[in-house]
Image (cartoon, rainbow, N blue to C red; front, side):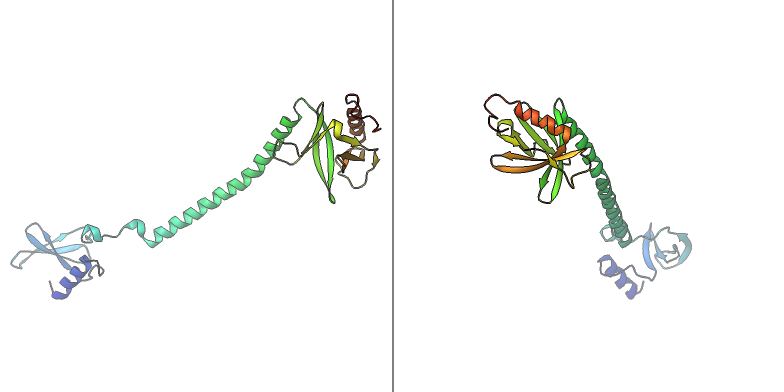
Length: 222
């Protein structure tokens, strides 16, 4: 083997160069074999006499620690990164589709838990220039108002019967259309006035609930 091929092979084994393009020598048994790019070789005796050609199979790439890891090829890295991106996008889309369904299911379950074994009144509260729809749970000593689109089981507004004073019904304008025959009612609690929108039948029921408190609580109000 020439000095040039031997130097290229040594540089390759040290990891500083690619595999030499020129044929190089390998030891097979007790003979020397010259290997070429066509995966065949010529066997020579130690004296240099040519014997016969043999097939060497796939050429070796040198020492084990200098072999390239196929998993780290640029093409494989690009495919792996693309797969991770697609998996992340699929998970994000799944979460986006699952959240609305879970929210609707929870609203239904929450409404059942709130209205269970209680008398409910559909009532809207005025907040600034907007109306907020809610459900009012009537109990013996208080009423509890829950927003329709809320997620909690805690009432957003609680009024005790002895503290509430309901005014006369007023004509309703620009109120939520889900309320049948709506009327406006001013509820005074501790000097603070709350504007409510309820149906006329529910107003009669709410007024009866307020007037049926124990003696002494509502004396002089009506």
